[in-house]
Length: 319
Image (tube, rainbow, N blue to C red; front, side, top):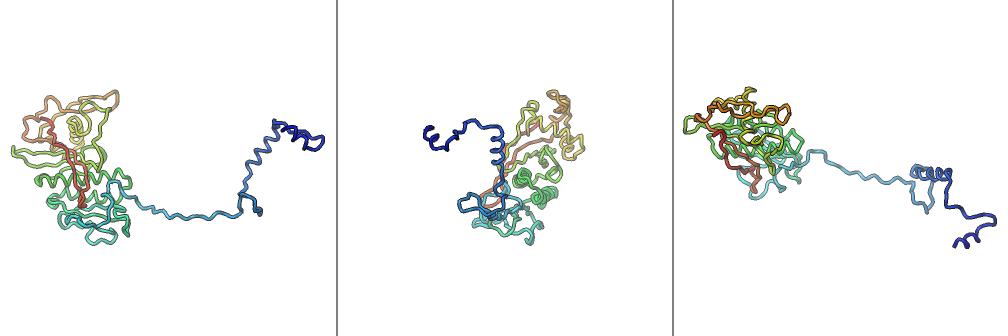
């Protein structure tokens, strides 16, 4: 093959070597960097590049808040079979009666609750028996409704839905319970809700509630002392110690009613700066007529449109 090519070349011209000089390589690299799209000229019909600019495709993106993961399952609102205690509001900017409680209503706003709706912000109004008799529970639900409109993070909206479901559970379970610690008071990690009712012993029953949104679970950590995972007795004692020291009335009520005394059970645990407090051997809680219970409540949307719940078995602390 090389002989044929050599024979076809002009006399005196030899075949190029496979080796390319440094100057040639620089020229080739320079050619590769040419911006052909920026060259202003008319290209012939055999060119692979057109002088015409491509048409710009305009895509309209709705920048409103997305539909929260904790919102009810997708459906068309209102739907046939929706519970009589639930009212759907299709546009919260024009919804007579929205957020105006006249009885036992709670208000749960969602962005894009109904994807086919005409407004971004829609909401559900749900009747919760016994709410009107509990001032702190009303404030609890009011703060939830406010934050669900203001918060962007899905985790925070899930937290709000969980807090609402947990309070619904307690109000439905026993109307004698009154909220003494709720979402409108606390901030950050710690005890979510505390409820109080009189008991037959002449003391009080306190119910500590951990609220979880749909699909959420109790936190478990390997970096805390034994018995100090969320909702364990050590965890409850440590938070009551903190609430009592910070003069939070709800925590002080439990400490005083049971006569709880604390000690530093795990000073500077694992070499860290944080210490964990527990009940001291001198505590007088076993002689008290009051009791402390705990439960975990997870939000669950019912098929009839109501916000429902699942709850764990009650655990009694400080026995």
